[in-house]
Image (cartoon, rainbow, N blue to C red; front, top):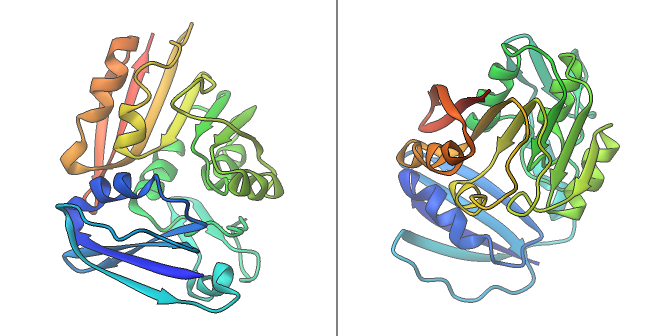
Length: 247
């Protein structure tokens, strides 16, 4: 197994991540390093990469057990009244097993969504790009019902199901489910590729994140043609979440 580390400036992280999406990677990790970010992917064989945002790259062979070695660095994350912790750490909070996915709730975009979910009235909810199911688990705890989640990675879907989430393998850029409330923690690239999905047929509150401040206007470009109006946007550590309403 190879650990491929791609070092870019923090403001270029989102664009660089979009360039890595086509790699056949078994895992993904993001490591902050001051003004730079290291995007890490794991796999058996990667081509030499060259693109304008690249600062440096490294390739490191790793031993068996790499999938869960990073677990020892996880800590509980508290946002508002919600605490998320992995099952091997004692204490209060919602228990979410990250499985082989990377991160639990520590990324600024996840924290933005967790905070906003606590302020929205509970309704039915669709979670686009659920990963291991952190936002879905939090939503169910907050009274959202039913909660349906989609994710393209079958491994992440299996993990989300183990966490009690009604998760399904589906492509958010094709035909994602609409609900009265939708949360999508997506990259700007995925959002831009979602511009041809079927339109909702009723009112929707849409919360999207996963985008850097440099691409904060992408959600409006994608979703305003569907009748959505931006209600508010919030920023955290260079990342943005935007809340839309559709009557």
